[in-house]
Image (tube, rainbow, N blue to C red; front, side):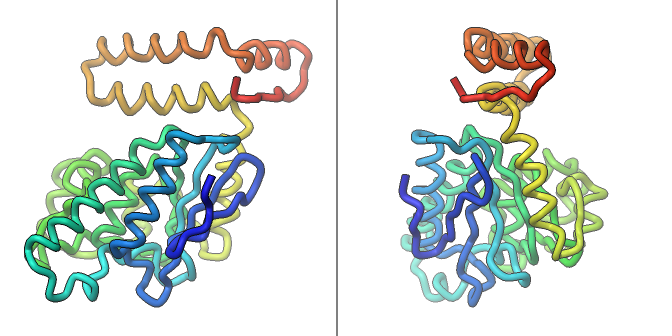
Length: 264
């Protein structure tokens, strides 16, 4: 698996846990065309070539910004055609992140504005530093959120709240993001990554097939009626039954030891 990129720092920070760090600190980790290509390549690898990874952590370099959204300096003077061509890459980027079969946890270490806020709402869940700030600022530029913001943010915090934030473009704090349900927990900046890693390690110790099937059942089921969702859940459940991990989990329980899951 390729792990060397111009705009990302990729590392295995603990067994079975890969951290992807947005690495354009001089541009507040704003994503440009190159970063979007890099994220697409990295996350599509995780879809087709999981290897031994079980959990993904997404964060930003430095302590000032998680991601300031699209790089407006790169976009300055773009023709309509060039803008639309670039946006197709951004669309593919967010779809690749959302389609990742592994749990993707955010460590939101600073400002998440515009497309950066959209990235947060596209993740499975996220923790934030107490100094993090969020905003969907697109209307102030004469555009709208175009990387899932109008869909994922209302699903995370409710229609009325998302409508207010998207239409005004006003910023909100980490405490507000937690209160409204966008963020699962808030930590002091120097404690954030340890907290995320602890949760990621807990998930990585569980059955990887069961974890991936649980994620699929939740996402797919939320797009269905309850009865259709339950039918999909049963299909996801049935995929775990013939696995070695299912047998190992039951055996370990009865032998009063920690299971050794292999993802098979």
